Length: 285
Image 1 (cartoon, rainbow, N blue to C red):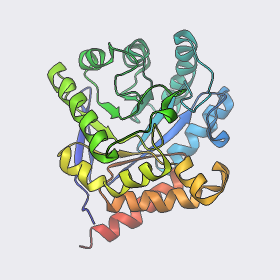
Image 2 (tube, rainbow, N blue to C red):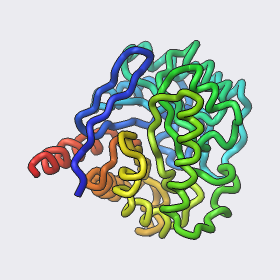
Image 3 (spheres, rainbow, N blue to C red):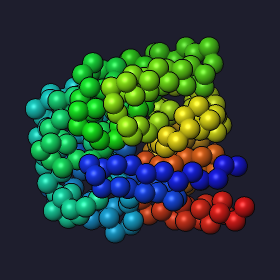
């Protein structure tokens, strides 16, 4: 069992300090995300979704305009930016100060999102592999960066699951990239093992069991866990994503006992409650 390690993120001079795991609510401004309950593709739906997440206690909103599910349609840079502009305008109208993470692997989108849309964090599923300009761009923008592990692209990732040792291989890959980010001058890096991305069912659970090893390999770096309604739950239980809230909450609670710092979820209320209970339990020891 791991005690929570407090951390802080510098959001352009505004400090986000965490003395418990943070809840990152997912806002997909796309028509084709894997979980249809998270799709918010018109202004009314986006507004209701943002209002709900804020009311339920989200610490961060993670907005994505490019679906990374296998088989999803490609989206042009201009279309991704158009969707983001719509979503970001609504977010900032409803809640001007909440930290917003933008889920993108494109450096141009990252630049526009931070400089013109008031985004605070860049969340890159590719760990810099899909755009060679991403690391330098994030360094120039001086914003926190979520470094996630993935092989290939969303279309090819599930054919690239051949590991010698999934935990060791993922940590090695992320370590090399973290060194590059450090050299580029990126100060705040959040580590994400990439659950569900180029991983088998067994790989995902091995990585979850190994979360303390990630904490040891990346001391002082927050660990982000994103398992909400994913196939590592639905395939194990033989259920649809719509029915995976209980399993998500169970696995998020386990993740917190193993050192998770940020939980990326579709269901904010359930996760906020789990954080309160787990934090009370962990702080008792």
